Amino acid sequence: MLAFWFRIPFWQRVLGAMLLGIGLGVVFGEKATVLQPLGTLFINAIRMLVVPLVFFALITSITSLGDTLKMKRLALKTVGLFLLTAMIASLIGLTVGSLMDFSTITELTTTEVRERDIPPVATVLTNLIPTNPVAALASGNVLQIIVFAVLVGIAINVVGEKAEPMRKVMEAGAEIMYQITRMVLQLTPIGVLGLMAWVVGSFGLETLLPLGKFILAIYIACFIHILFTYGGMVRLFGGMSPLAFFKAILPAQLVAFSSASSFGTLPVTHKVVTEDLKVSKNYASFVLPLGATINMDGCGGIYPAIAAIFIAHLYGIPLDATSYLLIAITATLASLGTAGVPGSAMVMLTVTLSVVGLPLEGIAFIAAVDRIIDMMRTATNVTGDTMVARVVAHSEGLIESEDIEPVPASAS
Image 1: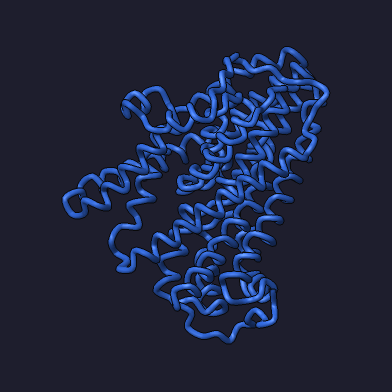
Image 2 (image 1 turned 90 degrees about the vertical axis):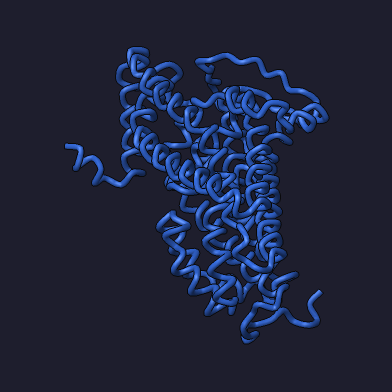
């Protein structure tokens, strides 16, 4: 029985659970709310992952740079461009999400009512530095955990050989958390079943109407980011026309879209970057695996920004300017840790939701259509990897030949 269950693709299991949950809610009405504890179990398991996963994944991402690359400037430029595009992606996500009408006839209510005391921006910035890192970890203060993890990662790199045991401990911790995440994510169909049965049984089918708009918003934001951010950077700093760039990387985009896996697309991405974009093989071997790990504009920038706005609308929770700022900052930093296992973007979404005080129960709606969204997110991520490879390689003289169509000299 279990063998048959796991032979079914994960996204089909989640989608089937969603449809079953909706059906149970329609047929049994309020009686279907008896399944709500299944959803609560899933949400609690997701919450359990957030602190250790963010901590270990961020440190490991930073220490992966290490000192193996002689030109540290190259590494800093690569990571800097990753972060820049992640911030732009989150701003695009916030803009598109704000312009979309996600309102629904019936507003949901959270199972856990939390006071949303949003402090001033200055207070938020000063509170980024934890006075007690252990307390930050224990209380789940995500922003302080991120800052502390970044500092630990940088310090491990600076100390060097003496800190090698700690680096290995952090890598082992990250691998352990990736494995636990894989295990917890197998509960997704059960959680979605319980939450959807509860929501539909309590509030009716009209609560699901904005879901199509949410998917559309993700695709629109990703297309804007790909065409204007990536295309613009390639034209201005990559020494080639956007049309030639997109034509060269199309095979990688198609594989990424169909497989929904940045790591699974790596062989194709490496081929188009080295053979068609003419990037040095040594640099390509560095930037592409790193990009598949920490360059997650679709998963860590656009997706959590729009998802936070969508869930806020769904529950009738207003967001102010400070909330938007927190979403942008958190979504950008979360992109550094949004990798390792398929589907972990959903885990990282809890980081953004927690920071602005939004109910995690809303994840069930997004999980139900995650496969459709993940295809476009992954295509965006892989496109970003290829763009960074071309732009940094061009700026550092790591392009092996220039027989690709260049930007016309008369172009403005």
